[in-house]
Length: 261
Image 1 (cartoon, rainbow, N blue to C red):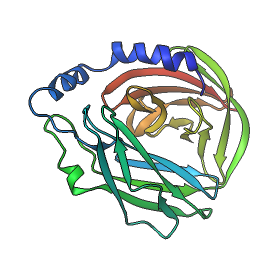
Image 2: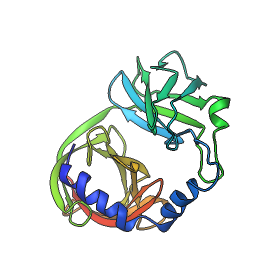
Image 3: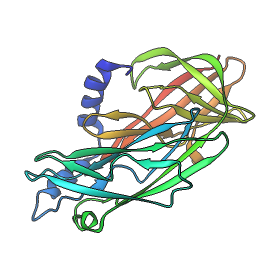
Image 4: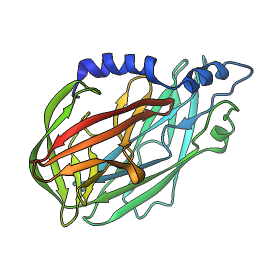
């Protein structure tokens, strides 16, 4: 994992200072009255790509604090073929535990094909929803295998968000204007973007996982359609205005700079 001291230090400080006040309001509301466990997936959808023929995708389930153990049941439906396997259709929370995890394994992934499935919590789990929080009781998974070509090492400068600069591998989807930065902020979380008419677009995607707030997403914040900023073909430098969010709120937007190989 890159930026160890920042993930454990800066990110936690940023969360306490910069997250919107609605997070505090939600935390207070959870404990008013007979709040139920609110068993929930952490994401509504996972849309990802791979260059490999096999992929394992973690599936995280959460609940409110409870002194009682609990077992949630997950059903897989609408799988496109026999490529999908749910490692365990039940996840068990120990007393006091608020996160539990299983995984979806996808095998025999063929290049150019899109693979999809849907996961659903049991009726009993859905009944644990409370009036104070959103509950995600179903989620979809989409996996696409493309042919990617390595362009070499790009240079990434994050003067405010990480206060760091470093080199990162960049790949291009063959025959397209789609690129990705390999493990930009955390191993396993590649950041995809497109360059069109010297404009850079960064769709919303998970960039790393915070130990307390969960998945941290980023996306372009400079304009419509996830526009992040301009690309200068002479210097090969992109200016990226990116906003960083978690389920509780936003860390705000920061400007980073990417110099292509």
